[in-house]
Amino acid sequence: MTSKGPEEEHPSVTLFRQYLRIRTVQPKPDYGTNPTLSSILLNSHTDVVPVFKEHWSHDPFEAFKDSEGYIYARGAQDMKCVSIQYLEAVRRLKVEGHRFPRTIHMTFVPDEEVGGHQGMELFVQRPEFHALRAGFALDEGIANPTDAFTVFYSERSPWWVRVTSTGRPGHASRFMEDTAAEKLHKVVNSILAFREKEWQRLQSNPHLKEGSVTSVNLTKLEGGVAYNVIPATMSASFDFRVAPDVDFKAFEEQLQSWCQAAGEGVTLEFAQKWMHPQVTPTDDSNPWWAAFSRVCKDMNLTLEPEIMPAATDNRYIRAVGVPALGFSPMNRTPVLLHDHDERLHEAVFLRGVDIYTRLLPALASVPALPSDS
Ligand SMILES: CSCC[C@H](NC=O)C(=O)O
Ligand SMILES: [Zn+2]
Ligand SMILES: [Zn+2]
Image (cartoon, rainbow, N blue to C red; front, side):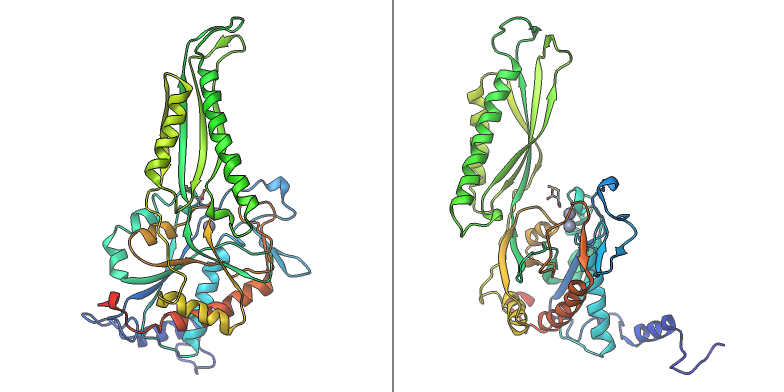
């Protein structure tokens, strides 16, 4: 029972023996063929957003596959597909016996969907992260319904702002002056007028994509105790996504001045305020981009480089100086992340494995760079 021929060997034993053959001997563990070079980091998050089960055609945690090949599940697009594609591409390359100059690391991190504060935000500050010596990273993108693939080179910065207005309370049958609601209304108007302006700017310029303008939504209104009591305090919460080319200081001053213009006792506080947007260059001055885009060209994949409208863990990776792209290889796929009936066609999933199987050798073979030394 203990020793069988190689054809009968238990796959776990084969894997174990393959692992033993990699000479990870300290002080120079052989992780890649040239450990002096910086590594490639393949990051994905393991958490998913909640579901409204009653709106799903299939149990969102069953991974039901329909007769056409669509796999329905929360995380099918965001981003359990990518985690498995990384693993399958690496597995294929290993089975084929490939070795590359640069080491490939995979990280599977928690809490991205709630901001990554207990996940990637902490991890990038840890010695364990620095020990990976990441020179370039891939993380998630978004599906593209057309033939093209979207790739993200930067992100908008989430600013979650709560505006609190205080004013005179009293009997709600009276025309009170200086009420919290009136002043809050003014701020809401200013911010929603700004929203409209940005929306028009996006609509009127076909060259602009969603991630290039600043968005804002009013997402919460709080306050009040009874129909006939004018409340002394009311608040409005906004989810801003600030475009990377915005002057952050001037923008914050603008927010403050909208509050001041509304009257006395109107203040704002931040629940999220990302201040470090970074742009990963998408021209041949960036050897990582050159390698990435060359593979896509060779595979006849059309790329649409964009700014990520939402926030991913890539912002933390870029902020510690590691160039990173957001890429989930899903073309001809409706954008269903966070939506009901999130699904991915198995053929698109498998094509994604092929794409990573081509991308990884190219990225892990980028010649030594000045930043490697
Ligand atoms: C601002 S922290 C929240 C991060 C979240 N990421 C994915 O959806 C997002 O809302 O963009
Ligand atoms: Zn995600
Ligand atoms: Zn998400």
